[in-house]
Amino acid sequence: MKKREKIRIFTLLLAVFCTLCGLWADTGYALNKSQTELEYSYRRALGDLTDYVQELRSVLQKAPYVNTAVMQNAVSAQLLEQSGGAKGAMAALPFPQEKTEKISEFLSQTGSYALSLSRRSAAGGQQEDGDLEILTTLERYAGILSEALQKAQAKLSTEGLSIGSVKRLLNNVETPTLSLDDDFDEVAEAFSQFPALLYDGPFSDHIRQKEPLFLQGKQEISETEAAQIAAEFLGCSVEDLSSQGEGGSQLPAFSFTREDSHVAVTKLGGEIAYFKKSGEVEASNLDYTDALLAASKLLKEMGIPAFRETWYLLNDNLCTINFAGTARFSESDNEEIICYPDLIKVVIELNEGGMVEYDATGYLMNHRERELAPPALSEKEAAQNISLRLTVESSNLTVIPTPGQEEVLCWEFLCTAETGKTYLVYIDGESGLEEQLYLLQKDNHGVLAT
Image 1: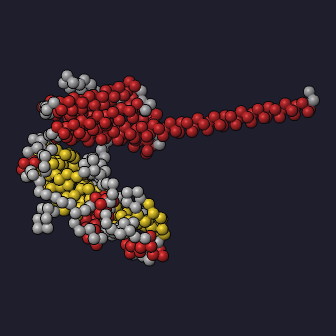
Image 2: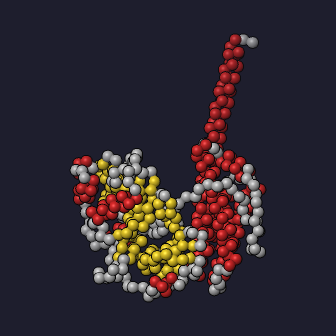
Image 3: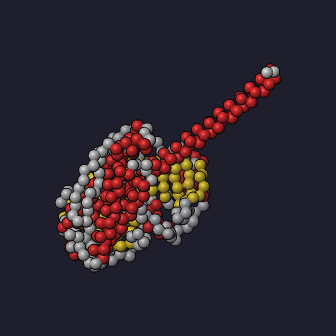
């Protein structure tokens, strides 16, 4: 074979080899990308499943203490929503069917039982003695499942595992069974223990309305005027600020930054809507009482006339406090009414007591002079609509938001159950209907409700 032919053959083989290497690399890249995207979808599904089961457990903890048909229907709807969502999320995960069969059955039975409660309530029926046992059992198994899912997520984060490793978690658990009455058979598998999480307080998702009521009738300001207000708030000169333009749909505001701080000033009225100072707080020299005093002083300096603290959380050397506006029936009346739609969030750093975050969105959207009349029902009359399984500890008059963006005057009752858990029950001051029920959770980190 001539030398030229050998060179030609070698060149051809080299070209084929390079082409195959390129195809192999492209195939490997595409496969790796596909596996990464699949892993992300699995993680999202696992996160959704965890959230649904946590909320399901929370609703089941409240369900035994619901005392009216309206509230029973609301609880039943929540159980249906969370159990259905959990089943959908679990279906997207690559767990073997034989290991998730009883979990799926537990979720299905929870939804079916919620439907039976709703039908019974619509027919004028009340909760029966057997219901308490069933609800308690469902709540216990929801807790077991919730804790196991959180442990699985923790392993994914701390050990860098894939969802395939989570599959092995299910493969290594035993499968106890539990018999209820004729409505149920086996409920769920048992999982290992893991601490539960706390959720944010009530009404935090209802802080916005179509228009900022507090700002109605106020004059529109220019960006220059807004910059002066922001500079005064931050204690600097206007030249130190950088404009971030105008933003906000429901609450139009001018935004400015200075070093590690960001502040938003409303276009109507020039009110401070939001402030945040970034950076870590390395020490904690103060406690909640100190933070509350500091936050209350700052609100008064900012011209907030009447407010009351509601929920708080201590975390990362910070204290987050939710405040609500207050009102009275008349100037001479001593009865203070907590207006939960008028929320203000203040975050105090626990090193020196300075404010690092302020969010007055709820207050600016909802606060105004309300025309309130004393409720038709007295405190004693309203308390008659509370479950007999709860003991009333204290009460307040409150204004709470409804899902339809309306407001209702309610009696708020702080109650204790026979289990030692604490609940907040809201009874409509006019109709006596049970409007809301929340589980109050207290620990060394704060007081929250869910």
